[in-house]
Each structure stands twice: as C-alpha cells, then as structure tokens.
Length: 233
Image (cartoon, rainbow, N blue to C red; front, side):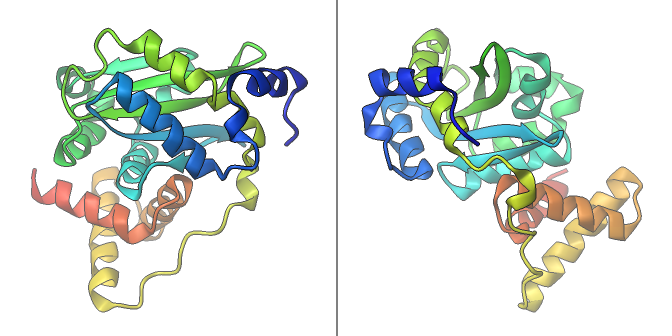
C-alpha cells in the first residue's frame, strides 16, 4: 500500500526518525513519549480494518495483543471506535456498565488494566485505524486525551500507510501446539466458547483461531485468557 503524498510530507516534518525503522520499534519509541505524558500507560496497540475485519497491526507486547484478541471474539472500544468514527475513553465503571464489553472488561481487569483510551487514525477524513492505549489506573488518561492524540498523531497515519494491511497476506493461525497441556487448554477454551455462543465446536475453534490470528498472538495465549476468565466467573 503506497503512502499518500500528504502523509509522507507530514511525517518528514514531524517524525523523521521513522524512516526505515521497524514498525514495532516505532510503536515502542512513540509509546515511551506517551508514557512521559501518562505515566500509568502500560501498553499500546494499533488496530486496522481490511476486508471488513479489524485486526492488530502491531502491539507493545503479547499481553496487550491478547486484550485485542478478546475484543475480536466479542467486541470492545478497539473494534467499536472504527465503526463509530470517533475515539472512546473507558474506566472500569464504563467498561462494566457496557454489556457488549463484558468479557473485555473482565480480561482487562485480570491483567491489571483499569482504563483504556482509543484514538482514531484518520486519512483523508476517514477513520482507517485506531491506536489503543491501556492504563493501569482508572484515571490514567483523564485530562490527557489531546496531549496523547498529539503524540500518536505524528506517527500513526504513516505507520498505517506503510504497514502491510492486506489481511489475506497475514500468516494462517498457528498450528495447534504439540504439548498435550496446551492442546487441552485450547480444547477447553473451544468448549467454553462453543457453550457461551451456542456454536458447534468446529465453528468455535475457527473463531478462536481467527481472533488470535487477527491479534497476532499464539492461539494458546488467547485460550489461556478465556479459560482463566471462565474459572473466575
């Protein structure tokens, strides 16, 4: 995907260090700048939409990507913000009061995340992606939305324009782990998902694989999160 000329010009002026820098390194560098603004920031991901599917382009670590994966199974601010066309800020109360985000709220709390801020990425006036910030405290992002948008605004459009956004080119879901323990965990998570969604087991396993692939995490990691959430009910 070729960057639009306006994006390249803006990036040349705002963030010259991006040239030839791997996307994950760009994210970490920008996240360090954001953490100076919001010290409670614990992780960041960027999600995009291609072929009507939202998926994670890059994340600061697998635990943060796993929270994205939970949203791909259910829904959450990372997914909804693209459709709504504007950013979303949440606290534990906001997450838990939103019935559609129940699983995401519980998974976030289990990982020590108590607030999120989702910033839209616009190219030529259209929302093409989101930057998703995860905070340690309920007030991590209070009063800081504009400052954080400025930090990521210099990076995100160029990152999206230069990323491989063709979903069909992403690797297939990882093969089921050979270790019996991991295989059993995946089977358990599949059963939980099948029962919760009233789906055939084969379809539930497909959704599990798809959500993990879209988040860029091993399916075993997502399976462990689902099993843990089930045990905590």
